[in-house]
Length: 146
Image (cartoon, rainbow, N blue to C red; front, side, top):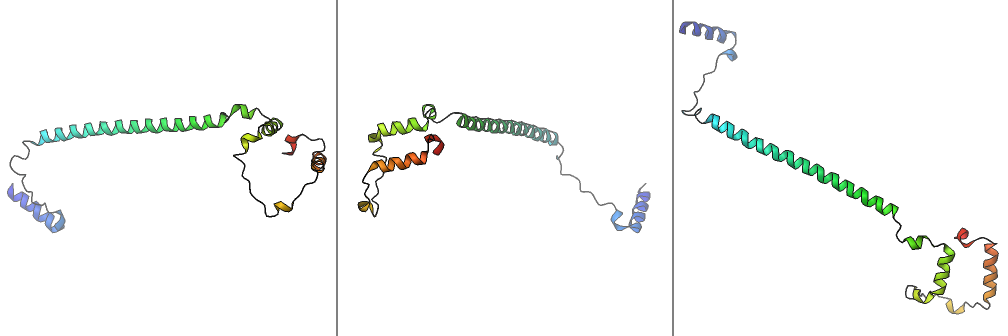
């Protein structure tokens, strides 16, 4: 049998040196004694780690979904709800009347800037300004102009 193996090796070596069988090193003593236990322990650790990864992915997906829903809800709420519902019901004539009646409340909001030629501007009669404005309105409502 040994002679036959040598003939096979010689024949393979003559065909190609790469076909020669390589010498095998035996494993260390006791290598296979603890191997099944080590393999099973490693498999269990990877199985637990795999479950944790799946749980973390589901939590991430849920958090992103809730975040998108909250942002969408917030955007819809801001688009549909007016800032001040009572102010939205006012037309421009009512707003103008309110400002004229309560002009004192707005004095702190108004900035007074001295114009360079303010002293030289003189309005003799306000009726001329009123006539001009009435001509410009030509019977139109204030809301149509502004």
